[in-house]
Length: 189
Image (cartoon, rainbow, N blue to C red; front, side, top):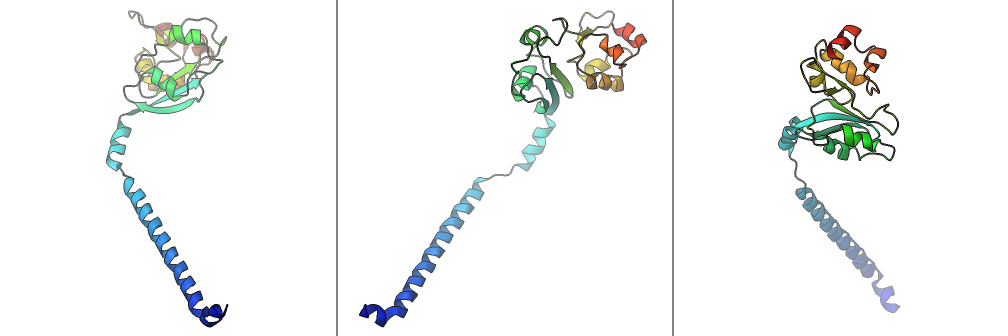
């Protein structure tokens, strides 16, 4: 104790100096590790703007885990949209999906896909429109605006109405929902 009584001031100053030294050392080490972490972050603004040009927007609704609009690569297929939306729910009509959806079909920008629940569709066949002379049916629940626009009497506005009023359980729903006129319906039926 006589040592502390005689040298109390130098001991306290030495302890304070040690505390300041350790604080400075810890601050220096922390700052250098932060600057090292920030140098690991790379900003690629040019590639981000280029990649958004190669994306399409696809709306997937119905019995999927996370329905909504997804931005997918330009050459994506229906399977990619299903994966992006979290897959089918337990209530999804898997039989309808396997019979009516070509999972390898390329998606187009603005396309809407609707997955019905079990028992929602009256029949297991695709609801479609055809044009006289053409053998391909266009599924009104899956067709893009561009595909619908190619039908006689249907322009971009009507195609947009058809898409916004989905899903359809029968082809006559186009008339009952007043999406198209009887005249247009007779042309494309």
